[in-house]
Image 1 (spheres, rainbow, N blue to C red):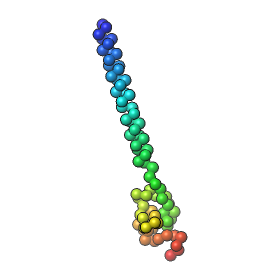
Image 2 (image 1 turned 90 degrees about the vertical axis):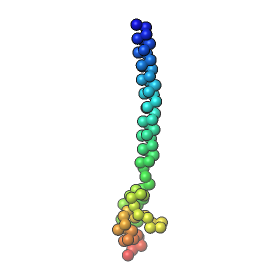
Image 3 (image 1 turned 180 degrees about the horizontal axis):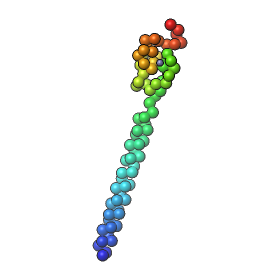
Image 4 (image 1 turned 90 degrees about the horizontal axis):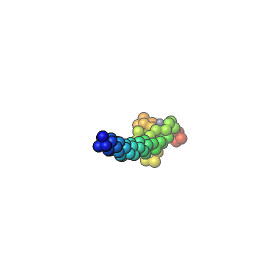
Amino acid sequence: MRNLLIFLLLLGAIWWVRRALTRPRNGASRGAKKVAGPERMLACAHCGVNVPESEGVRDGEVFFCCETHRSLGDAGKGD
Ligand SMILES: [Zn+2]
């Protein structure tokens, strides 16, 4: 009977340790997602729409939301 009690305590300890080990890992992966998630948003020089840097097109110093707006050019420069 005493052995059974020790066995149950051991099971509980293993469960507690496993929970303690897996919990920070979940938090870390969530944190990593948070870090990787917010990407730099840049405004298109033609239409002014904010687009993630990776999805837009760069023309030297100027940023555009798409290839079409890059060919149309900066709205501020006129035509
Ligand atoms: Zn645009």
